Length: 81
Ligand SMILES: [Zn+2]
Image (tube, rainbow, N blue to C red):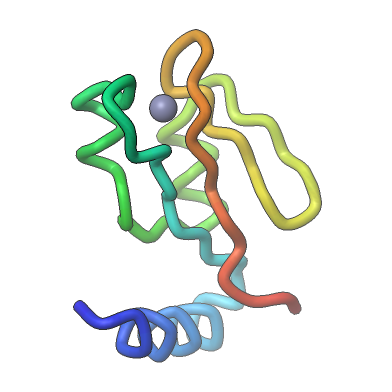
């Protein structure tokens, strides 16, 4: 999917759900675990992220999913309210 298409989908999702929408961004190097690589590029609403990731750290626009110890992946907010 092209990035522009993903943005459009997220705009629609946010409008319909009235929730924040995040994209999972895995750090793409040799240390990325298969689990994180599998999440890469997936889209989560804030509710989905909260139920999916037990050790979620919420910051302003970038949340840390902490999929595993020393996880460097990020959930990046697509749009500000
Ligand atoms: Zn990770």
